[in-house]
Image (tube, rainbow over all chains, first blue to last red; front, side):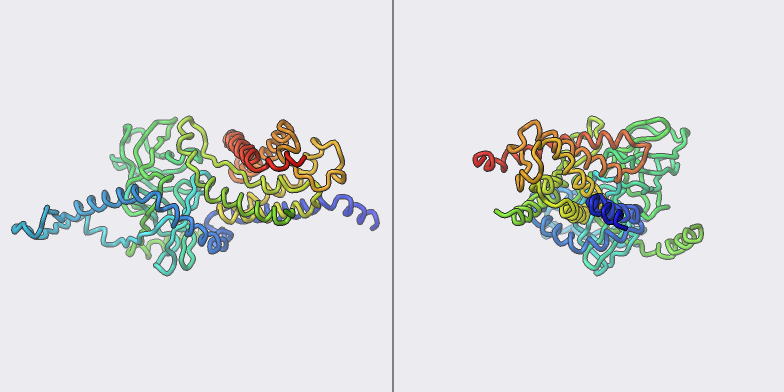
Length: 277
Length: 181
């Protein structure tokens, strides 16, 4: 017994080290899968307040770029809806509003878009999270898709009352189903290196992909159909490198997509996955 | 200024710089062109590295643990910063022994700053601890043998950046102690 006390007294620092290190590693390996990490959700409420403060200061610096992107998107949407814009509608007597909804535009009615501001973002980690300033009060639920007007961003993983956290597609174990111009279905995955490039797998050689071919979402995953992912940049031993159309280093505003008709499908798919596990 | 106040000030200022400026810095996009991995400079270990030499070992480790957890909260990494911090706090007295010939009792509350240690010793001291911290952190974060080259590359690239920034901060703020000595 005396020897034991002597041992602890002499090497107490080593034991303190051992205990603290074990606590840390326990936290690491209990939370290493982003689907079930409780750590992030509890930490969010404190840190997101700080990030909102910071974003309110920094966002002033990026106003120009944000304005430009919003004007561009407005123009594109007007084009899609077929609203003709005349120079001066009051003078022009022949002016009247024409709305020619084509079949594609009607389909988008199933989706509800919730605008959100990015208050924190990272691109250098293994699993990258994006914090948004909308939460369950605005109707955000886990597993909703997050997109910008340029392309895909990620999916919601944690929701608190006023904030939510999304896993970006720049994450380990995040797969997005995609389709290439000839109709072949493939899989998009990030290789943990460059935040502008993702890998495209599972496309047969017969698809005959060329450089700069567009890669879009297939509609089999949580994302709506025909959302741009990026363009083919390089052919690397069997896989393709895809240059992302979303610039993750300059992410300011995003849309959270709620698929109104999709609830039944996700419930069914979830029960299947639970049965397998 | 007492050590406690100095520590709290250091804690707030350095963590603010780390979280709101360095974690956001877009060094990333320009460097990835040459096939470099994305990285951020990590300077917050400096908070613990400039504490007095005679601080109790257990207190140092607990302070390191708290600092690491605060960092984890803000960067969405569960426990990885904390684990790396506890490791270098445990190793700090042994590394310091290499540079101070006197015992820790004689040195009392001397701070291992740039001017106290001298230029070369300080770089070796900071470099050694930062390399250990970064290596351990990236091993925990990436956690695969397949990408061990990526771990090494990330460690070295971001360690160089961190050491440069720490040196710069020391040149700017650690001047007073030289005049007194």
